[in-house]
Image 1 (spheres, rainbow, N blue to C red):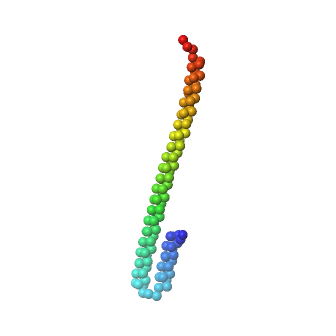
Image 2: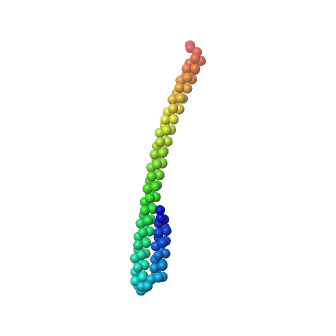
Image 3: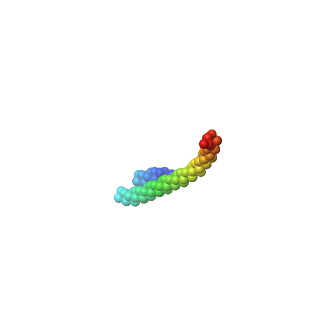
Length: 106
C-alpha cells in the first residue's frame, strides 16, 4: 500500500519541478500552481477525513470488543461465584450437622 504522505510529497516535488521547468508565462504558471495546490489540498483533506473515520471505527470497534469482553468476564465470574456459594452452603450444612451432635438435649 502506498503511503498517502509519499503521494503528497511526490505531488509537491512535481509542482516545484514544474515551476522551475515551465516554459510558459508566469501568470499561466501561477494559475496552474493554484489549481494543483487546490487539488493537493483537497486530497490531503480527503485523506485526513479517511484517517479520522478509520480511527473512529477502530475506537468504536475496540470499545465494543472491550464491552463484550467485560460482559463475558462478568458472566464467567457469576458462574464461579455461584459455585463458590454452593460449596460454602454445603460446608455450612456439614458444620450445622456437626454442631447438632455437640448440643445437649434438655
